[in-house]
Length: 202
Image (cartoon, rainbow, N blue to C red; front, side, top):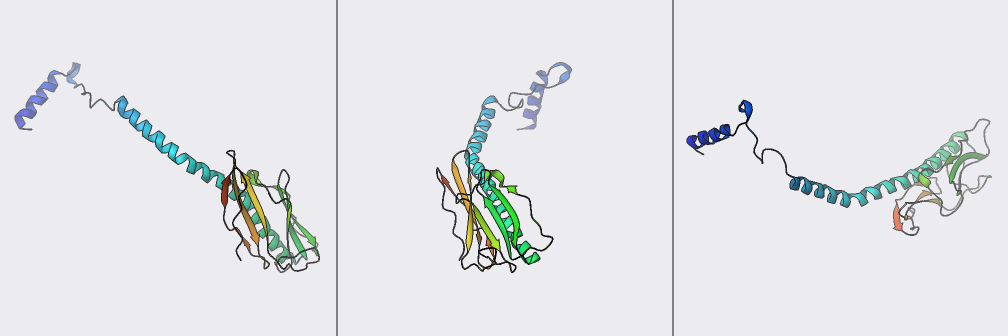
């Protein structure tokens, strides 16, 4: 635009000014239109709809992870107690319930003072589809089969499951090797029925 054109444009705007010489904003300067707002809201809605399933799945997976980690933590604690107290047998007792509970206790060869943690309810509605379970450790932190401290010749595992309000089943397991190594191999999910959790490492 030339200088003369700019001056003419400014003069026309001043002529349209309101009281006090203030310029009234044009329609474009006044703000966004209702159509523009509607488009933005539609875009936000579409993004929310596309993201919601992933967010929901993440939250449900976090719930089963919490329950599985509770069992794994209790199992690790029992092994450490067995080593620390030189108990013949220190065990984790899992009761299917409901409610599903976890209890640590010294079974045999216990010293005068031994930690016995209170019974805890499995968090987030975690369940034991395989029923009640017991994991025993001897004084060396290895698996044992009974209160005499007889060495186990096979690994063991405890399956933990969570069912979402949408009837999706999430499952995992806490694997314990003969040597006492404790591993959570991963998680699986399936709609409508319980999935087979990942296999324990060899």
